[in-house]
Image (cartoon, rainbow, N blue to C red; front, side, top):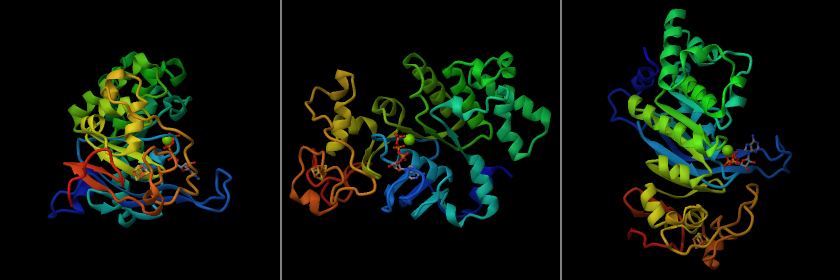
Length: 341
Ligand SMILES: Nc1ncnc2c1ncn2[C@@H]1O[C@H](COP(=O)(O)OP(=O)(O)OP(=O)(O)O)[C@@H](O)[C@H]1O
Ligand code: SF4
Ligand SMILES: [Mg+2]
């Protein structure tokens, strides 16, 4: 039985559920933990709802520390939510049987920012790519070898390179290995955390093109995390903009770029270097520092940096409202008209 079948069986008969669904997910880290913070918890992710459909690319964008990687780790199951549910094909991760958890491990794979740190330096590329197949233990050695060669070809690595070690490769080649390894178990979703930000600009588009090509061939979905709106704009079908642990706006890239509703999205777009990306409209840049995730501002979390903030913004948290099909934003005084409720 394939991993996908095992998960799908749990929901047989029901209408197809989205591949991944986050329902009001919150993740707090204990304050006196790893980072030596005081007692207040770090509110890394707060009340996030998000859907990733099969074959879709959802981009998560926002400044450093806004909770993007935590969200990715929640989806892949490396973190458990403090509140809310992370559902895979309709099944809450917390309620999964052992067999379902095992299936989920192969259905969702991860691509990291720094492939060098993620690849075992003492293993050959062949062994690195083969490892998830060995862990699954469902195929013979010759079958695994054949699959490794096939994967190498798919990501543009020569068979002669398979006996090499990660240190012998360029950054782009290492990311190709990371991609081959991620694809080894034929996942339905790859969580890609800043997959090209450590690469030279000239290599970035090669890797992004390869990711897009593999997506089309394998009906893959991506959850792409990036602080770089240009990458996300190019790559995603749907963008979620995060600020201090919350999704403040989401929608199609074209809509968000042309007519953002939230002042933070607008400021992020204005920070994009290409003049054309700003659409010729004057927008305010982001001023001031990101507040601490242990004590986010009351009301709208962006209010301490927002050029349009008013008294209400400190008093009430703005709810997410619809601004068009698939377009939502949380702002009391948006830049565009909300759809009447
Ligand atoms: N294990 C942890 N323990 C305590 N706090 C954490 C832990 N992991 C993340 N945090 C905190 O949670 C918040 C969100 O972190 P996260 O790494 O998800 O942000 P990010 O958007 O991925 O940032 P970057 O762009 O720098 O990678 C930050 O304030 C961070 O310091
Ligand atoms: S709710 Fe207020 S502070 Fe927040 S983005 Fe909108 S105008 Fe700015
Ligand atoms: Mg991160």
